[in-house]
Image 1 (cartoon, rainbow, N blue to C red):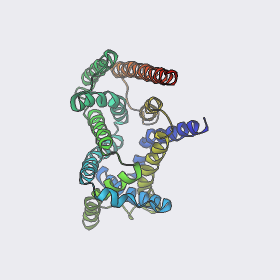
Image 2 (image 1 turned 180 degrees about the vertical axis):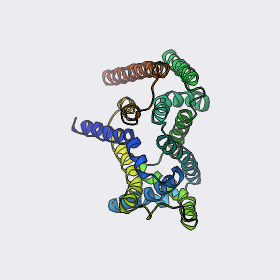
Image 3 (image 1 turned 30 degrees about the vertical axis):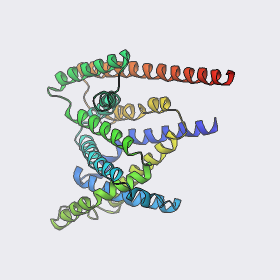
Image 4 (image 1 turned 90 degrees about the horizontal axis):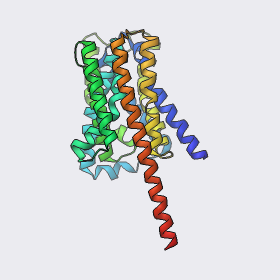
Length: 306
């Protein structure tokens, strides 16, 4: 129980940090979304290298260097997460916090669809029902916005792809983040240098507090990932599945209560359909996990008896 409790606390901390990101990125103005993204890449690498140095954990470098497939997957993951990070920062800093929250609400449904299309997985009837309601929600919100919720869809698809790629790579959080940010380091530094040469950089030109906040972008990127990894090795996957909703709920609350974004009745209807889809999806996942546990217990009992 102590390990399980610690795992849950680590998970809550990770998802709470992710959920409160909408409060952080606006503090970095007048830096633009791409400049913030570039600094996030650079300082994330520095942060994770410090963590690895403290842990004296370097043996994985030789091992992964001998596996070109994993390196290629992590390079692809770096590109995908760049799209996700950049879109999210842009969405938050342009007054689309609620729409960004929608992206992470529908992300589990997108991940299920990836499983069907790319991994040839078969969905249970309730999973198809959840996906159907999710599709209906997108249609309703398209009518409400007067356009498809592009930002939400880009966030959901990019993060779903990122998770799929990371699952195939099967590399630890700190190690994979090191490789990903190392891949992104050159273009990030090149862009920062370009801004400085053009006289458009905000780093070092908006006071010490602004410099500290840009550096902090790397810290708040690495720390939740480390917490999440600590949680994932201690708690069941079904628990992680429930904890993941903490982030979009907090993001949604930030958009409605802090950013004061408009929520007309039609938008509430769309979000309600999304939440119904997630309730069905969660219920089915918990039921399937419970059935699997019962099946394992029965097989163990049969083995002991025989």
